[in-house]
Image (tube, rainbow, N blue to C red):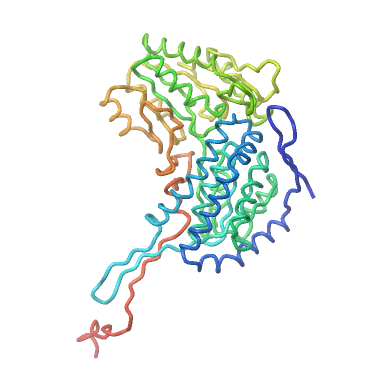
Length: 471
């Protein structure tokens, strides 16, 4: 039996290690989930709500402990680990509201009786978690799925198994019936066994490449609901306003979480004017002042390391490809002295007039493109196969109305970072950024299917429809 382990990217210390589930273990977990499904689905929704509220109480009681696990395993600063845990806690109440609003029961009187809308769970849901938000993002699938009456088999990222294990412990303490929620650990082979097994849904957050693989894999399995939340090559158009405030928005958009958010700005589009020049200089200056450090250091850093030294090497190679194509280096992709190889400094490139790949660099790398006018800015913003997030920095209401009308993205922000999102709103994108099943508040939509009924208490009155039409 193979083993996996997660590594603190700041120190190289082992955070968690354990056995990886093989196909036999995965299939056994799926059978347990299948057996548990009828009983869980038959419970009154109030009972399922009570269960997820008990889970919330466990998270609140263990907030510091679980946040520290998230931070240590991902490299996120303490403040960001606590923010992620806070989002997990907040997700419970939001999901309960969304379940009632978007997937509850509706009844309307008809002359013969009633028309009733119900929502029914799909069955056994597989959830694959990412490493960048190893608690919050899978939690955003798991809580709505359980509320709807599904059972869940969850495989965390092999890079963040400790967070997955902590979540499993919290669900166990919440007192779910056996088989309703299970966590299996492992790498690619475990994931392959899970998605090829007897599942009714796959809820996935991760890379566009993996999402494309799943779209092809499930093309001939229409019985499986597929919800994909993927990456983006996101544009931020910064057009006018206070240069320092605009620079702060750019830095938070591009470099928060060391650039490891799917909604991070990857492309900064500015006018080829004095404002554009000043802004690029201001962003470079501000990014150089950001505190970089390990998750538990004082003073608190703004960014920590990438998830691994391998991730840093991949991002560096992507950066060098852009340079080879003719991009001008504004801020180099530098390492951090006396730190592990997973630590990198925010980098900037001017790619104006350069043909560059339409790819997501999952690291603090920002590409600057200068344009002549707003028409060109909109064309550049939409020149991508992705469509997750986009942003405009401008005080011009007319430009904002154009931006909203013409943007091809699922999350579009004004004068705020592109990473700004709310659990009370949908979250998802177009093109290679998803498959038109947004998560967050709209997760209730893909966790249950609608069932429409015409109902009467008895069979009287049906013969009347045949009067005069019988021989």
